[in-house]
Amino acid sequence: MKKIVIAGNWKMNMTRKETKEFMVRISSFTMDRNDIDVILFPPYTSIDSAQSFKPEWIKIGSQNLWYKDSGAFTGEISPIFLKELGVEYVLIGHSERRHILNEQDEILNLKVKSALQHDIIPIFCVGERKEENEKNIGKQVIKRQIEEGLKFINQEVILAYEPVWAIGTGRAATPDIAEEMHSYITQLTLEKPFTVKAILYGGSVNPDNISDLIAMPHIDGVLIGGASLSSDKFLKMLDIVKKRR
Ligand code: PGA
Image (cartoon, rainbow, N blue to C red; front, top):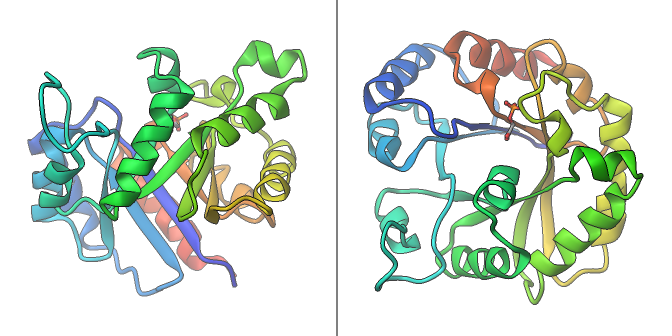
């Protein structure tokens, strides 16, 4: 049976107090399966609160990092600081960083290298925008994002396919559409020097669609935004994944 990753990206939400409340609430859940990895990505300032109150089966990731260890980079966060907080994963190339913060392939590549150097597992996000999807060039966009962003990488990474048109819209990709892209990404990465540990789907995942998505052969898990902010919804999704098969 394949291992499933359930990742929750909290974006710029969840104060330290809300983080504590969330963690206390979900601590009553029993995760007795070691074929399910659960990772939460709080904002930087709530990471230590998450670490203090989380149940043991949850791992903590960072939503971003800077690619240098220290220096004159006002406002940025070093991978060393994140390691100090027990961070094990990092999101790199999320569409909001690509399109709102204008991060380009080259800098994303430096961030992936830096994460790996510090033993932080990168979850490298790719996905086409609405207009690219309409022009039917989604696969070309993803190919470029992967080839440029993961250039010269020869370690293990997790990928997340997040079509930009599905993020925060309530309109997830259908399981068939997501599966086609995941299968394409699997083929594309087969001969690359890096190893793909899992390919997650992201974009409006919720308790109603999670089951059909993870049932697809090339979907190894999900990256959940909005629906991971509610402990009720998050627990519901954990329960669905735990009870399947
Ligand atoms: P969403 O966000 O689930 O709210 O669509 C997903 C993401 O941006 O990772």
